[in-house]
Length: 199
Length: 199
Image (cartoon, rainbow over all chains, first blue to last red; front, side):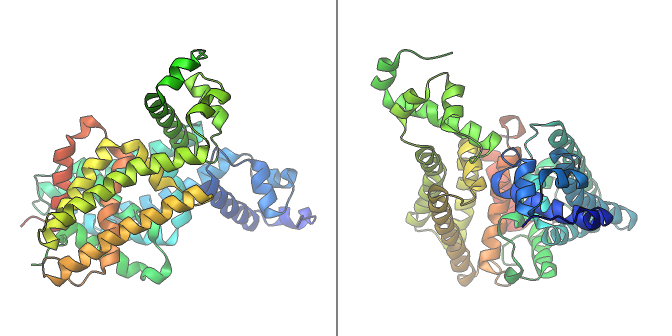
């Protein structure tokens, strides 16, 4: 269905940009970022390509906005952990739990983030920002090791990668009927700190 | 560079099919399976599309072969664990360790497997086979819980997904300079069973 009411649409840029972003991310995740054109996005919304360009300037802008939805929330969780003033071990566990909640809430955006390849400038910027977040997690593992809460025999960067391997796996399997986000968040944080073994 | 020596090529189908498969998987992983055409694969090998069709019948066949390289090795690891006759808890830890070794060895093939969407019949078959492997892991977690080696307060399917979240994360970060496969395999199995906490 074509939208001919472009005056109304242009009057609500926030609302429309959200709808455009959601449709774009869905296509990027299904067919790949490279394989999706601005025409495909317009078509899936039932609008013309020229109407689409009233809302966003480029496919790259859509990628950057989508990545910001994912990383912005993860960075906010890391900042909150830092501001809490708790011990690093407590902050690390909190960050794992909060990251699971972000993923459950913004699954499609994080899915896109984790599939970014770096073929274009917008993708490279996303990768750079993602690596900065990874370094924050690695630093937190290091601090937790120094205060004695986390075992010192594991390389902190490897530990950070494996922890977020568990967290990020949600993009492949999480659905609301597989558990409340808070319950999954507790399970991930528990397994990360105490493992599977019966004690 | 075009290859004009098609007689020699056709004389070594195994060798050539390997080169075709490797090139195809690289393109699938970089640009997406949907976005890659048989022409792209031929071009990256410096051969004509018609020469490419001497080696493989379709893009779908390449996907099926690539998935088999990944899942065949993982299924073999699961079979070996079963045949060992060890307790389920020991078998589960062994399967985690062996799966890490498979990933380090066949990173590009597993990367492709984990990105399969299910848009085509070949992709749907890959997903079905992958789900069967996931069920094997879930069953092993259940058995380990029943024999008392693994904590019973975690849903076995969730535990299996999180364990393989750690294992599968290797596709995003593993490089030989980040640790010998055997050492990474030990770290993953240790964290999975004992967690990060200092004891």
